[in-house]
Image 1: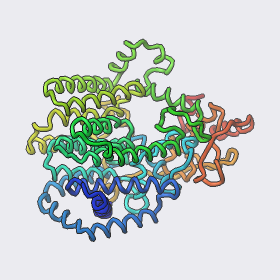
Image 2: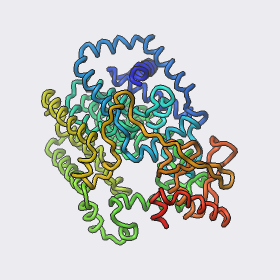
Image 3: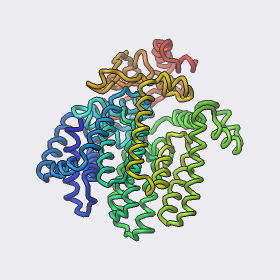
Image 4: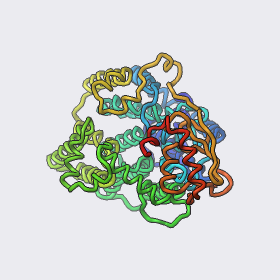
Length: 543
């Protein structure tokens, strides 16, 4: 993957660089430009065609040709000759951590199915009617999907992203970033949007602190990060303020970023029916928008996840404002520690802003505060404000950590994370509230040969109305089930709402709508679900 994609993306970045002459220097930023250029192009293509092997091979040919035509290989040679020891040793460590089995549940319930749909069908109108989660279609999964046919069939694109980050750190000699690498090792096994969102945001932040005045590029990239993970809303707000309040830029710097934002909104409307997933904001009355009851269920679930599913939605509704804050801060388990650290981080950041009396720091703090308020209002799950810890750490220690200290912390933390991933029994014993520990499988010898990956491929086929669909047998998520696939718990939700998805036309590409089911269909769905009641706890619980 790395041998194919590093030169391909660097070559595509060189094309981008020659189109837009005013461009920051460095291999890493050139590769990032290649990612940006490729993802935007593929997002547009995905409305019309699947991101299949033909798209991938075409992209590889163009990128590698440009890599040699623009003599980008000379930049790589120059970089490696200067940084060979650190680059090769840390790269091998990144590859090692990326070879573990995926353990993030979203990998099976959201990432893999999304990539599968994009590579086999493309962007599908109203796909959220089939499975609400699939309505997200992050830009990162569009990027992953295009390279999932040949270059990266094991979906380890985040390994590539972290190595690009490493190149950036070594180019800029900004050693504080190395301290953050071990935490990012936990996101290498899946195409999680958290890793690219955090990496891109820290690179952009570093460029701002280095007084990069190319606000057009920075704003476009910040909006791109928002399209990868909308909870990163603070980043475009920060770059917007930076451009106009500090650099005194004119409105023209917003053109490319605004175009990316419009593409993101149109993509959401196409797949989800509303401009911002999963919020019912600006109802356009589209025929393919999801059922209101399912959206309400999703909203209630998000609220319950805010409290780690320790309270029912009815109990949460009865909380006073004081109870809401108290129960969130002091929830049982490790998440209470994370919540308290989050609040403490914001307080420390505020004090730091007062001490520094810097307009830039204040702009950054206000942007982070806006994001924090938005997250706390909608769904205050720790994973939605995880990036804040990285930002606060970067700002506080940006000019303090030396290379030696950064490498020491990096080395010790890497050993700890290695033990954490390799011995999951220790995790479940000493951190029982860390539920993901139950899904870790530890180290396997074969992962040295190829990345560890799960395979099930067991399913049954059923039909309701004009939709013939497949249901995974023996697991809760349809991660490798032949399309179109619906997981049993989503069928249960449809049944409870008295609806079921249907094809909008004759093919999967035509999209999906929902309609009310008849009594006969209701009985048929109940019979279908009965087949999975022994293996799917969620269905038993719902009964």
